Length: 422
Image (cartoon, rainbow, N blue to C red; front, side, top):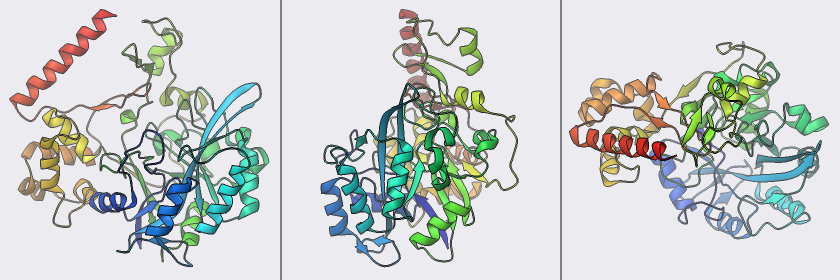
């Protein structure tokens, strides 16, 4: 059984999320995307857990289903903020639970350390090792996964608040950590440069804050399971057996791939940052050190090394982003939606279009330039201007027509003027 899973999402009760991010919309757009298993997100939030109970039916498999049979598993994200070794630490962790009862036990434990009602991703002053120890006491089927491992401010290896190794973070509880999430700004190839990570399963999920198809499922993990049960899923994560591959965006698309300062419109590669001593030439303050720089700092292998048991992966830009770049229109514009819907309808999913359709079939459904861009995307041939300091990377594609080219020229002129004003 092929399972395409996005197990790191949020609900409408997390900060900076869509107010329409509910279970019906999650199911609707997961089906459009081609995802067939979702995490519930935010199970510690008191209102969201009520909605989960009302709208999802639970059975002994650990899988919860909607009325139409779409599967979810209990999942949340927790932010741990504390001090260790005289340094402020901020680490986000994804938590998977085998059933609602266990999820509620986790919530009761957390309520002893603070509130859970103000945010779907609550914050606690609990060290990571203590957190894992206490959750393992509740139920040893609970799975804790370091989220977006390299993000500067909230990743386990982040340049600003992270650690240099799993062991430094989780100490003796490292034995209960079996995997980590790459995040948008890194991919498996980058993580293969660290031999210390070889024993961990590499997972990818979206961390979406809305249900739109350019967010939901933009990264995912493909499992091959005999049967979809919570136990089978966790076994796959803990042993690597059953993980087929991951779906990644190009790391340059991620919001923290390069170093830089968003407010100064300045970004730089690790090599360029080194030349300027990691100081922003605009404001003269320290740069936010991005994921590529941090990976290179901890790596003990050269890029290109591939472990023996390495899982393959797809590197894909979301379809909406491709259309948006070609038309030089916003992701949510009528132009982009119309073209997207031309492709994704009549049971065709976005991932089918991105991964499986041949060029001749695509040309029957859409503009020739869009069809060619989809194939380039599949081959990893679309260049991306790297993201930095909270700014997404930008796919670089030749505009589809003269009108789109004029829009691009205008945007570039405005950007150049903004830089000259600094």
